[in-house]
Length: 433
Image (tube, rainbow, N blue to C red; front, top):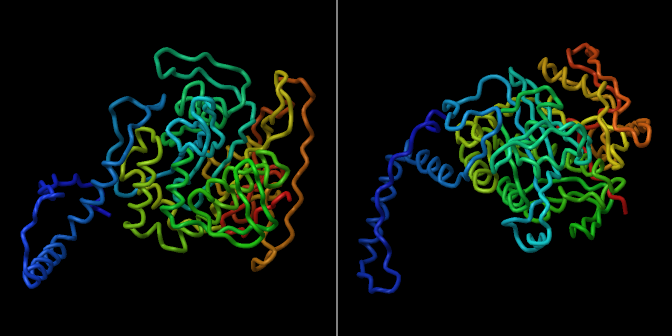
């Protein structure tokens, strides 16, 4: 991988092909000889040139980056061949219709920009474990003062839904909000829209997911029978967006349904040796660079590839997908979900300490364990969490951090109301038809 950080050489000027003029005729023998000579030349220089061409191809497709509040404009992290230490990366899925295919709606009529998906990836310092935390879109959180892209600053707010942060201050505001909520520093962030999800799913060749019971969602157009489906392109996007077709029809059900896809995606990437294959990684990196808005520190080929490489040797059972612990509640007259701070503190204290975590609750209402998977057992019932007092803007939550217990293997056993699964858990989507 040492060639990844090298600066590509300037490509030689290629003569323009005549589109309508008369071309000189060459004999078949001469054409074959030229082809063979070219092939030999490629073989002789492929050691460095192929990597250089691939690097140039990816770099040339990278979109303008976004400066986060914790970054210094114009200052890049040094190029690296393999990332050292831990990683905190925030992935935000935007529902904006700007620049998207017309089938997703009229951008002039659907003008809101909300982050329907907000997920935090944490990779431990020693690359032995990874955690992906999904934040419900209707989670009431304090939003700090955020920089206005047009200049100035948006004022802080004590309680707003997390999915409004993109509309207040773009990706930097979402990052600041999650940093305040979790106590973590997040140097890497990316925003993806509908078309980007389609292209990224195509880049990995699709993902095999289990559908336990039929999913039919007229809102997204998803119609899947029970069974295993290879999802890519538009169908993958529909699957990740559906909430009316799974679980109880809520965003909480959608999160556990997304975790079915994500755990299968991890297995696809690792089982197919994608994370060890530079050619495949280049393809995915190019798709990401071409279809996502990246923060400055992530807008770098080496950083993208090296973060992927950090996941290469992590066992499936140490890659955990969790839903931020929450309770149905009300804030300022709006219905939504409120954070359960005691459980959240246990989760993020473990993450800050780089301790592996162990789940004791269920998978969530949008998924279930695959009954046909080896060693499958019955899925624990989702934990019912008492709702806060109606109309209260202050969640009845424990603000004090507690030291979570550790299992004999050193993993922190999280409370039962922290739902999710590992990449080793074979799960199926739970349609609500």
